[in-house]
Image (cartoon, rainbow, N blue to C red; front, side, top):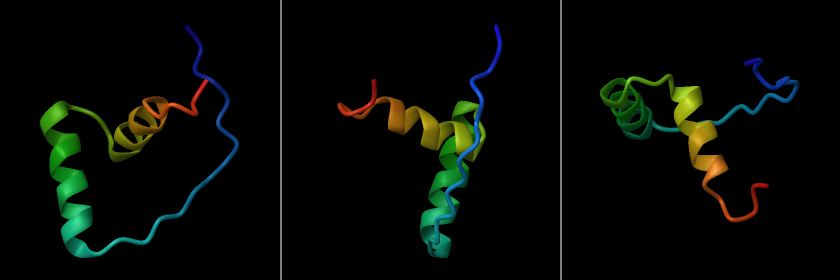
Length: 48
């Protein structure tokens, strides 16, 4: 199964508490931080 082409980049600024929360969550579920963000986006009702 091939991965979809990713040609867009998003830079997000966050404070240390937000970053640590994301990093800890990602580590706990065994995903990268990018995968966590992508999974969140896929759960939006505007994602098709």
